[in-house]
Image 1 (spheres, rainbow, N blue to C red):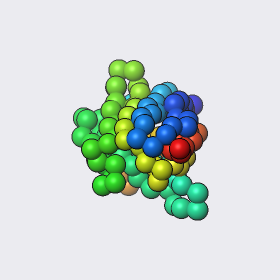
Image 2: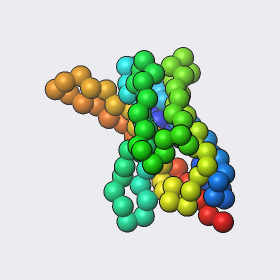
Image 3: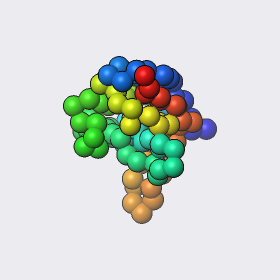
Image 4: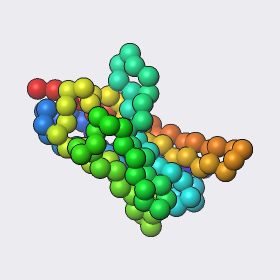
Length: 119
């Protein structure tokens, strides 16, 4: 059984920091591209950052220089360090694991974690 269990998040003031973690089980972790997505109220879910099994990272422009995605393949864990948070970063954040073995794409999601940036 595949599980992505998220932790972290919460309420923080603008300019503050939060760290999200996602622990995976039931998958060959190193083969999956891991990512963080977010969904704000009334908006579609959007990509925040991804990291491949080899450690290549990708970020949406709005978080570059403020957010850092990292993974530990031995611990089967991926983190998202969020610094200089802005009110517009408020959203539910989701951990994602994707394996592309074309033509099949396998995707799993975490349960979601609320991040609220407010003064």
